[in-house]
Image 1: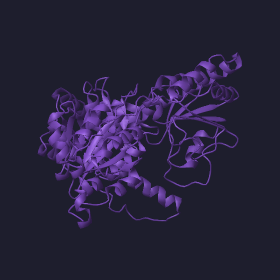
Image 2: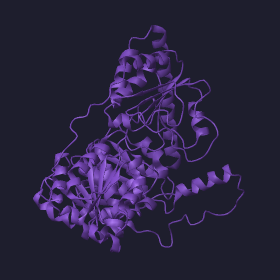
Image 3: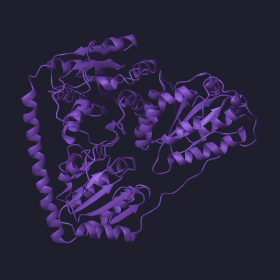
Image 4: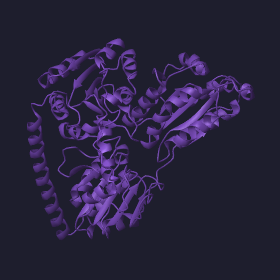
Length: 552
């Protein structure tokens, strides 16, 4: 058999269903073989970054691995930013790129470069087979590493001559690899630390949702009476948005996180990097003397940034479930404290709901409409099974307050901080969840990074509703410039440089029509609900360009 056959059958053996790609000449071997493997669905994008972004969100929404096929050095270069986002979101991806014929290597042929070196900084593993004999074993290793915790992208370069070489070495897989189980002693130690606490808190990352621990985390919060915070950036929904114990996200600076966590004598960190700060503060985010417990599905993330009183590596769902069971046997004094804390959290949640209503009434008649009003109108008309892909950036708090996000699968977003993930990611989300309607919420600046995603949605008839919140500025940059000036004592009355998206104003409805998608500009807040209903009825890709207010 030839190397290309080994490659394709490796995908089948590892249960791959989707390939996302933007192909070129060096990918002919893969493309030509697709017709022989109808079980592999190929989704074409018009930019390599869009292909990777779609694959990244596909893995998050489906729980399955995805393969990406890029085009040699320039194509891999185009994709690097999105591969970085996949690395930060722990997305298991096998990323490939065609490589020029190795017999031409010393002549520096057109489009060639050291692809392995290019990909290495943003992947867990990067390699290129020297012969077809290496292809089967190399693919086994690539899939294994991509799926090992913490999961992430790997890269394999595919030289065109290697794909057409003969080999007798076929496909192999790693088989079933069991997850480590935490010891009873570790569970008992965690229980004892919690029972000794008077005011515990939980900070959760994405892994509880990915590992099936969602319900266990809810039970843990309730059984210990703890507020639950989430990481600043998230790819998944790890706690219900309207649960009384939900306290939103942690900030991006240690001093601000310390204000949230400062009163807590114990903090449980569940399944994340903890913490991804933007601004430097020479303080701890935890109060002096606070006990810190961290539970991860891998050893690497334990105590990576902070010393711990207890670190546990194992199956997160199993660990948290066992911990909940152990705590259910607590004494009456602890249960009384839990009841009191949960009652306080519930009252605080009620007050927050009243404040949110007051905030909405305050901006109800603003022109241009406030993002809060726009998202309120959308949330009131979308079906309960709607999936939100969120890259609203500065409107993230409004999204969290207006949509009732109940379960994993209701919400997805990008990690790493790079923009353009929302539109691209909605493609993979809709492919993974074909029976649910996906709404992609994006700022206008973010949308321009991956606007080609509209063409892929139309080409593959993915009924995504793209909602562009057009404030006609890079609002987040203006906020960050304000913070920079305060932090570094920069006295300035200067305007915000190069942060406005005007002259010309971006016409997203025209862009959508140019790619075969019906688009509509919405200026009046009272028209948002009807526009959304029209989009929902279409059962086709649809774009709403909603003009909202910018930074005051």
